[in-house]
Image 1 (tube, rainbow, N blue to C red):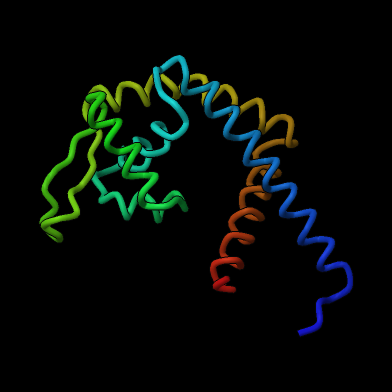
Image 2 (cartoon, rainbow, N blue to C red):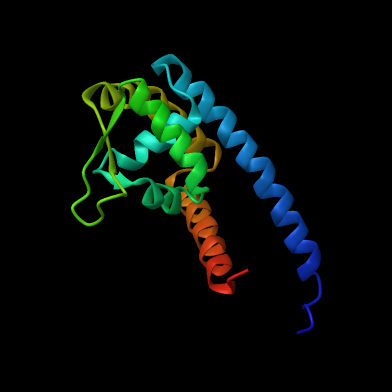
Length: 150
């Protein structure tokens, strides 16, 4: 298939922009998580199970990460008392990761500063409708990449 004019350049600019954006968001996440005694990785894993227990493979799928890297972080948050493994009725070997009260408390300590940052970012983007448009564009791009199956 022949690429439409400018498509290669747009793909390159998108990839570079998303890479830079990822680094910026990780830096913000580290800054927000640090006062709660968390890292971005611990925050992501705990956040993934805050709504209910999940197996490590399910967390990895949700976060778009390798199962092995999520397993390492899951083991760390369990060792720190921020989460616990529970039996999984659907699979005897794939235990469920669930946050402990301490893990949920750590996540709650992040929420106020997270909310302040979100409001500031929304303002810089021109308000909630423009922020929503950014989110929808990112989600559309992600779905398109999923559908392409590369």
